[in-house]
Length: 497
Image 1: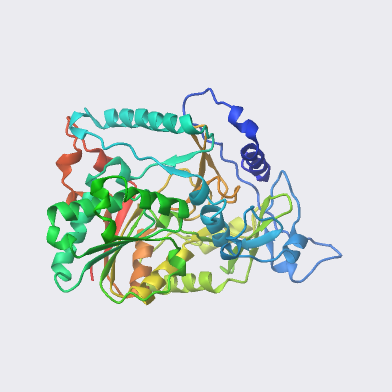
Image 2: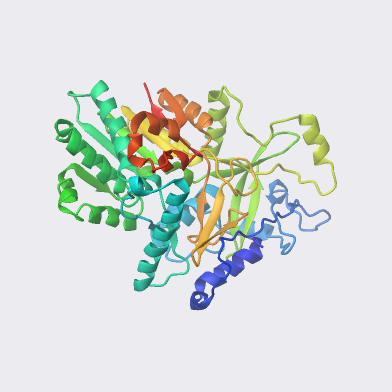
């Protein structure tokens, strides 16, 4: 169902007011069934209009709509997400790299997912001592989710509301206090009293972590609090406004105003040199960093980079060319030289077996795609150039279920009428779908070290919380601990030298 036809259905569904009248009566969450398209070469044999330039193209095509878009590919202009930021409507009759398509889909100021769709669940703190067990917590969470969304519907009914939660919100203030405890301990061991405690948070959501960290430092380390500065770098204007409102939400929060600066810009446009020691927090941020899609020739192992074509009807087509842009090319070379440990890759395994498979009937002439975190590489380069004395603390998912086909591939999902809809293709109606990737922590660790020269430590999020949190605060009556048992698929990396 998630062919170009399905994208067309979603586009029509989400663009008409009648979608608010639709209802699903089946209570459990549903998933769209996965179905994979065959991929065929777009090179036409015996075509009188054959063009040598077209012979370098490889187009993903659908069995349902087998349109050849090679002429459009040659004619349409190449655009970037930066160029589209002033667009108020989703683009058509253009082409762009995969990373630009994802960035435009998620972060365009006018129709991007994080700009126009997202609501972050922020319930009142849970009283874990009154909760019987982990399963009881799950039940209470479901009830609070319903109550939270019912209250939103009193103001405006929205069938496509994108509501999600983070560990910061579910386990506040205790999760944020664990982060603060790590920061203060590290600061006192390395920089106190010669430098201020300067904290940058990348993508602060509702601002809850910011307040929890500052509350903890003020209440338990007032001497450090006087020298603490908290700076949020937030690309979403909507979320930046929420964060500023948080600072005015109570007398306690207003007291932090002189310690906080909210910078509404993308980290990828940062050009200010910060020469003093600082801490950089990126919690569940890397999963939404744009990636590039690469396929390989199974015989020659030559990479081909994806360009996404959007036609006049708003449908999406993948083209793969041998020309690798400088950012993707640099990532491939840095990874090759920096990674000493084996990593997942479409060309892993027997070259002989790949050769045999390529000669089978209906075999494709390129591997399944690999999604490479090119924006992550650029982020590390910004840290090296502009924040040379930083220490990094990140938390993100090392594994995700229900991913699209490919290596290091994303989960692509939306919510419709309070239910999660996962699809099996990455190119979908811009702004209505979350596109999130798993993080290969071993590869990230090696590349970060190669770019910045700094050493790091990787651990599971559970191990980090056992080291920095007061676990009794989130224990249920039977001794279970949801803060440890949830997010088992998350890991932490922090700078150690």
